[in-house]
Amino acid sequence: MNASPCEHRSHCPITYSLDIIGDRWTLLVLRDLIIVRKRHFREFLASDEGIASNILTSRLKLLESCGILTRRPDPDNARQVIYEPTRKGLDLLPAMLELARWGGTYDSETAAPKDLIKRIEKDRDGVVREIRSAHEPAKALKQKRR
Image (cartoon, rainbow, N blue to C red; front, side, top):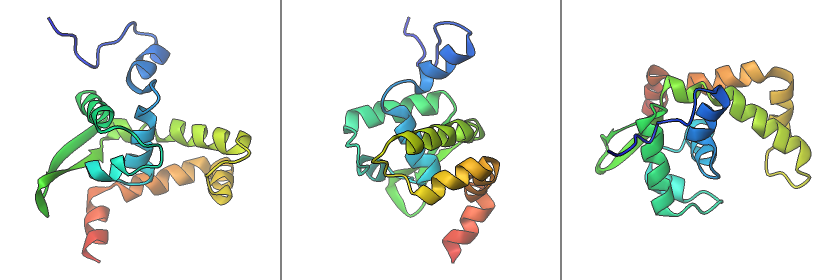
């Protein structure tokens, strides 16, 4: 019997979280999906960290099976799929922003824009609302039509 990719070692909430997002690639895929707003496989592959295609495939399947993202056919190109965060995925945003704030504060060579780090420090909830609203289907459709 094969184990589900979303099975967990225990019901400790930290273990639950780490079993899904605790490797070196998953949070970067989520960063690109939620914050950078990448949608297609090739866009994820183009990230600066240089994720291998087999690792990316594995992480996308894990995140889909755990209900953190969905995939649907791209209406503009039948050979592609579009990846989108679910509510469960978007609920990781505050933790991701806090990790970005922490890394941006203590990495002297951070690539994070200083103004973003300051915005997160001063109004993390506002930044969360702004990013979440960009993922609302009606808003995204309106922006696409412009």
